[in-house]
Image (cartoon, rainbow, N blue to C red; front, side, top):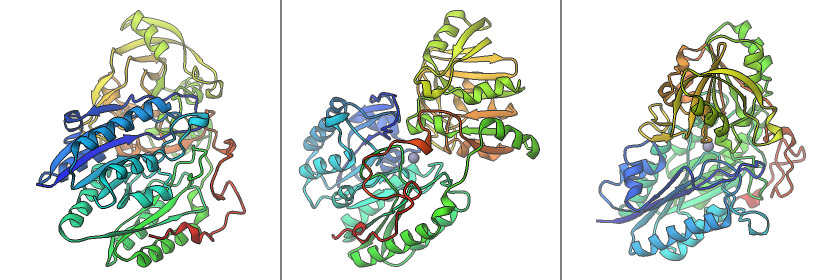
Length: 497
Ligand SMILES: [Zn+2]
């Protein structure tokens, strides 16, 4: 039986947030990898599901919530453990890895700009150049030339909200199987785009849907193994930051390069289509009243913990309270201090407390609330049941559901966006019964919320991630629209074999 190692080291790192990172999402070793991810809609869950006829050797799955860079100690410790387990697992017939693709590790002179390239280099040193190495990445990946050189194929997710996590994992296994049994020899072309993708990334909606349709057209052509669009992750001031195209063919690099450039040109020619202006929460509420479709959902994308934001900005909460909305809720505000006060007071108590904006002055002003404590949870444990992460166990930490007038707030301690409504329901709050819902999320919430939403507005409120004013110093290429002189003339973007 073929022996295949499986593992992940994952972090989406903002170089602009004050939030520190630790391995706080998962740190599963050996068999814990199987017990944590089997049967889940996650990349590693997909690896496991499709590998029934392989002898799987689980290494390590380390994942941190999106935040600032991990310390070098934490990063090196995880990489060392992965590599030691990989050595112990030899001989191997293949390696399956899930890497986020937009990680930065260490600070100052300790910083590694491209940890994924660094990880793949270390893995190759153990397994050598010939053992198949398949890697799946987030759609928000800043792909580097190093990653392209070292992996046999990079497979980027092609949905946002990212519901195809397990599916892309299975795709990696499929490519691996063809390499092992059918003589497939992947040739991978990489085209870094001279642009950063704007807010139009939701793959179910035009114009992004057109981009994915084009991608699928290329994938359906004879000789193409897989193709990817990475929209990039622009909260990172590193040389490889930006969007890119990847095309993998079977022993035909020129074909891969031609198709990569074709799709890159198509994206570039529509570069203005990927952007739109965001209203404030107040403006969005006014638009919503005109539209008259409920429930109204406001997505606070700049304070999305899923992008490394603190998750405690108060712009929308303040707007909801000032508007004296009824049947309104905020999912969530990260504020362990406030949650502690609620726990000390107990269910049914009336509490006076300052909520939010404790991570940074850029997150707004704390909001003084006089609220009733509706429900409490020590660990905030629940099971996801929406399209993303279905089956996965979640923990929001010390949590409280409070209500002032018609505005409900879920206070949590773990920085995690609302991927579905399961946690809220466990706290006696059913978002589907609400008229106004604020989510600290950019798009992932859509998978579970959009089917029953009346209208959704992505809004801009103050946060540490004020997209128009991020101080970039280290970008490796000119990027539209930050740099109006960016041009589509980057033949060096297509790498030789
Ligand atoms: Zn993503």
